Image (cartoon, rainbow, N blue to C red; front, side, top):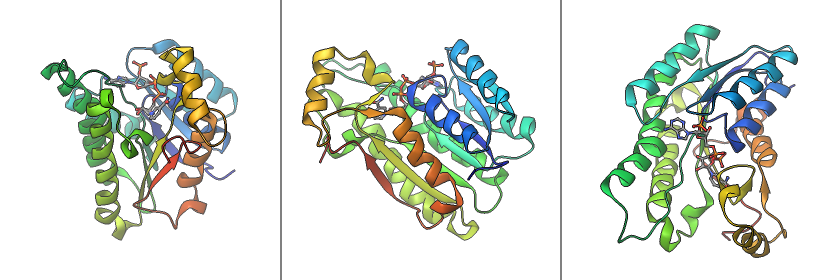
Amino acid sequence: MRLSDKVALVTGASGGIGHAIAARFAEEGAHVAVHYSSNEKPARELVEQIRSQGRKAEAFQADLAEVDAVTKLVHNVHSAFGRLDILVNNAGIPASGEVTSFTPEQYQQAFDVNVRAVFFAVQAAVPLMPDHGRIINISSGMVKRPSARGSIYAATKAAVDSFTQSFAHAFAERRITVNAIQPGPTLPGMFGRHSKERQDAYAKQSLIGRLGKAEEIAALAAFLASDEGALITGQVITADGGVFS
Ligand SMILES: NC(=O)c1ccc[n+]([C@@H]2O[C@H](COP(=O)([O-])OP(=O)(O)OC[C@H]3O[C@@H](n4cnc5c(N)ncnc54)[C@H](OP(=O)(O)O)[C@@H]3O)[C@@H](O)[C@H]2O)c1
């Protein structure tokens, strides 16, 4: 088990990819802070599942559009578990629409949740982390090929990629690694809310003939979080079956 006794905070662990990451980290021996915003039930169920495996787990509610809630979340997790080794900034929202019809409020919400929360979670977490800590940011493969309707979403994730590279330098002295994963269309998760036709079209567009699985993103996150990932920092790794190649 590669994450024995590490404490991980996974934001958005009530959703598809975050749930898979939190579950995989627990399988690898980590204690897990399961963050959610509005979907309490899957978070509570995941906590029970992790506890049944003999690890510590707690659910934490926070609306990460509120910057104070971001900081409070990190401090609450640290107080509850007594340490914080791994931060996974996974929570995110889609933003899809015509450039001509987005409102300033939609723009602001996307940047608050997808970008600002990442920055201030890292700002709060790093002073609490031991040396050799791990930060993993969940970006999106769409950064490589922003669609017409994905202008705001892709820009938020491009900002996350930029933070990733900058943070890797900022915390290098403490040997805290910082990496981003760019998933392609992945199930379960927000992509599951698209029509079957759209899902099939993306599967065809991939080089592997199918969509990604949240467990596959979790496997990569577990590797980056482990000692085996120590060589890798400041990287943005695409895991999309070639959809955006
Ligand atoms: N699935 C894909 O195809 C795909 C592809 C590329 C990138 N991604 C990225 O992967 C990450 C996870 O996405 P997913 O597919 O697993 O989506 P998801 O199932 O919709 O989960 C999103 C998670 O983010 C949380 N969240 C949403 N708004 C929030 C807010 N204001 N404050 C705090 N938490 C909030 C949700 O919490 P509640 O449900 O509790 O409200 C949920 O846990 C996101 O960053 C997304 O951009 C996904």
